[in-house]
Every structure is written in structure tokens, then in C-alpha cells.
Length: 152
Image 1: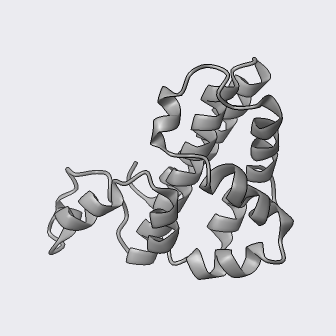
Image 2: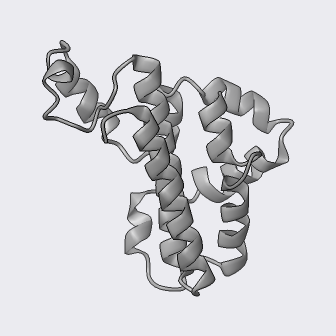
């Protein structure tokens, strides 16, 4: 990945993969990948906000010359969606918008309150099919959370 567009495209690909897993009865994996798609979209937004093409390519000599880039990378390697929401500059807008946007409020409870990187270690059957379906719908499409992150 060399730029925010590629990171955003990867986020969308992970959501497609989550849907494939869901439609094949693998809800736990679908839940994990759905959350990961949000993590990637937030990281793309952070790259845009910071004006850094890619925080993940540690071989990029131009980026490596940025003073403090190592510490920034270390901080942003988190999987914590709340922290990434703050770093992306979207936390206040998210809080304001979720007060009037049911989809954001529901995503807050289904994703931000339940997902973290340890979801990949949860036992099969941990996630309810209905909740994963709702989450996938909330993340998808023109009114989905991924689009909201991309457009704000």
C-alpha cells in the first residue's frame, strides 16, 4: 500500500470478504473482518489528515525522513477503534452525528463497543448471526459507516 486510496480499497475488500464469510455461515470471521475494514478506513483517514501517504510502508525513504515518524507509527499501529477515531479527527463529529443518525448509533453499539483485535481468538459461535448481518449492512453502501468515514 502506497497511499490512502490503496488503504481505503483494502478496507472495502476486507468488507467484501466479511460478507463472503457471513453468507457461508462463518459469522465470527465475518465480524472480525468487518471490524478490520473499519480499522483500515480510519487509518487511511489518518494518513490523509497527517499528509503522510502511507504509515505502513516502513521502507519508504521519504516518509522515514519525517522527524518522529517511528513514534507516530508505533502509536497508530493500534487496533483500538476509539483511539483511531480520535486520531482521525472524526470523534467529535461521530458523537454529534450518532445522536441523529440511527446507523451510526447502532454501529457504535455493534462495533465500537464489541470489536477489538482479540475477536479473532473468540470461540466459534461467539457472535450472533443477526448482529453480524446488521453490522455488515451498517458498514455497506452509500450510507454505510465506511462511506461516512471516507466522506468526513
